[in-house]
Image 1 (cartoon, rainbow, N blue to C red):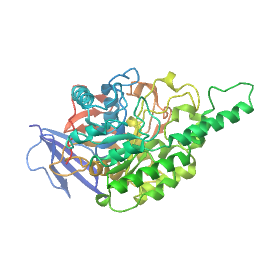
Image 2 (cartoon, one colour):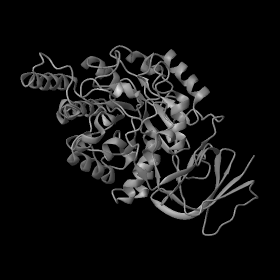
Image 3 (cartoon, rainbow, N blue to C red):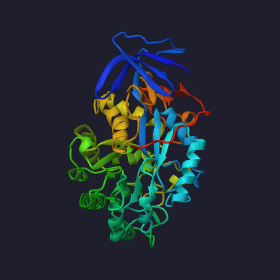
Length: 453
């Protein structure tokens, strides 16, 4: 089997930076070398990574690759290309596709699609509904990453709004229950309130849309807190494994704690967009940064950043959600919510390292180690001997600008278009295979299904 020697990098792993090298063999990290150590046997390929940081490949536990059924927006091939170009080596796909991943048959069919098409490693969530909770006991916990629960508005029939159903879901599985928390009644009342206010100052009988600045007022801090508080309460009652997705408010943080991750049954995620943007960015980016939950004030953004550092927030993901440009037309009521972020997630967080918001060790902890621990992924997420060789080389001080021609996502736009980054992903290895190198992607490779302990 081919041996690859990556030498002279700065290895970032488990809270440390060490100048060193690794040897890849048989899809795995065969050796980790420090202090001038040399490989134990000859290597077929040598990569001199002087000036680069060698990180575990990022694990994104929250993506929407849109296949099956919504492939006009994105598909598994295009979005896994974007992942590889961004240093993301493993993903977990959400169930609101068409058909929705709410039956065992749909789940198995989607996993087959990923096996045939994905350039990176993968798993898929099973989507909870008001009625399908009996199937939770039939899920293979070694193959399925978790159960996705919408406690806020969603597509189709995936909004779970019956207390009896919620109790059955929280009490019916020991898989991680990944929850979208927004209180639908609060959103409905806010929509009526602001629409009525606009009507009173307009000649229109009933405005069909509202400016984008109303989005965080409609999907308010209160809507998030009420729903998250309920989810945490139900999880504690059932001793369930709860993972609250995309926190967006300071108030929600009081519902979590800073215990060691290994001791937690209740964990929290922040998404890249909520760490990058605040509501002042609506002026220039408009609906390009419209997402659910809404991007809110700088006070909330600063609280989220602090919570990443303190341990209240356990993991950073993207909620990568491509839409066609036409879908993003309109305002707070009409424009689709979601944005493509996976290709630029790692470099965005490394930019915050340069701004001294996070350390590079913290970025690796939240984007690589913590997802592996929360989901109990086998042999990934760390630079360890015997672990799968999912690794990425990134280089600082390499300015480049996001342009339309470098965007891999099928939707062909990004809210970061025109932005100049100082960090660059040079190489991405998936199971020891060089899938991305300086703009070139190996479309022949297929990632592996994630396995869980």
